[in-house]
Length: 161
Image 1 (tube, rainbow, N blue to C red):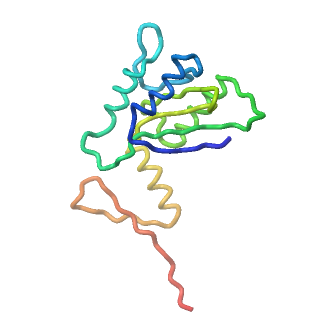
Image 2: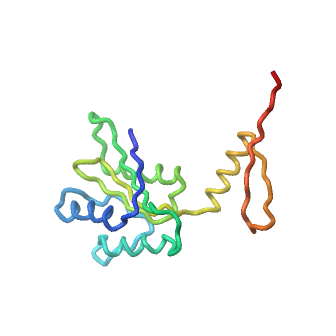
Image 3: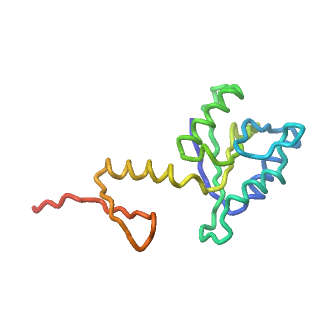
């Protein structure tokens, strides 16, 4: 499976592209995590947009705040919607996006597209990052002037030649 990950600043455009395909029945929603579902059990672009936009901080220096991933299996692989859904769940969990709102659709042109905002559970991500850095030889440097923030400095072995 090949993943193509990109970021955009246009949440409406990204969602609109796939929701137009859903309306034309050229795509279907495979999975939605933490998003409002109406009485009919469906999702509308307007409701998904509101839910996702709420996650993006108002004063944000990051320009491209929307995460988009296209997961593409080998052309010979014919995966069921259930299998694609499970792959999407596991993939988003592995990237640290598992607990935040996201939507996954299956189109005829691209097997699976996933959209979410680039903001996610910082504490869980930081813990994994810290462990990873420590295992790689980094050490923790406290910054008392910034509460709760931690900086890392990689220890390098210096050899004289």
